[in-house]
Image (cartoon, rainbow, N blue to C red):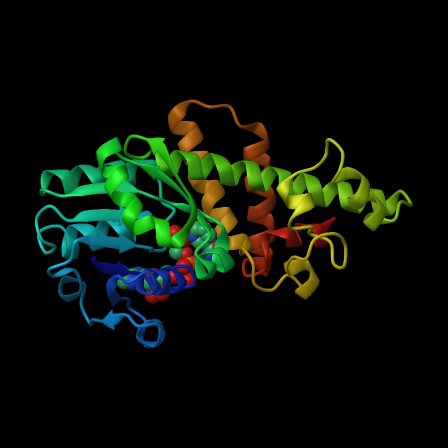
Length: 289
Ligand code: NAD
């Protein structure tokens, strides 16, 4: 397939490379010259404007920072410029309303579109092991699989347009809550005189087990390898977790959902990021306890 890929940052760079490895012809665009140079190294054909990248393609994948940028890119440079009938896949994490609005605009322009946000981070983007949560009609989901499979360990149809973004905001709210809980339990065990490694061994095999404790232990030198072992460099930045929590709080408010722990987690990450820690991995909340 001929695929345009727009947004070749930490996530998009590796994802586009995996599409090339799978035999697709990838036409790449990013505002950053560095990102374009890396895409060339990975076998993408690069372009200096979005309309050139989307000309003649079967599908357009976007992996962009936020909903405002996603809407601007599609309305200015993709809708009406890509061939009629092309499939659009937005893999960015954005708000549900914008995802639905852009999908509607795409349909009105004669295109098919899914929202397909991801879970997994940069290592999974590079390794082709992301989990995609996909919103859109069943028939469009079936077509989208051919594009998503080479980048994925799992591709799950969440429901109609916007359902992928609903899944993503709920998942990341849950992740923030169990990460903070894991940090609290590890710090408390240590302060109460229990070797935190022992606490890890016990709780990871008890009812306290969860991904944050078992697979991404946020205390340095304890349990599973994680950015905690590297002074919280790399991993999933606290600023990005705060972005996702803000999307979740807006989504909860729109849906009339009661999310007291989600609200509290948002405040905790707000305080942490405002203190200058936005670039640190989100497990660094441990250092505040
Ligand atoms: P990033 O900032 O590394 O990459 C974004 C890229 O988009 C940059 O290269 C930037 O130059 C480019 N860009 C910005 N505006 C553009 C425009 N108008 N046209 C073309 N390119 C433009 O961000 P990232 O970490 O790759 O995240 C991308 C998306 O994936 C975000 O929505 C993020 O929330 C989501 N996400 C990130 C992770 C993660 O671990 N980093 C995990 C899951 C989901």
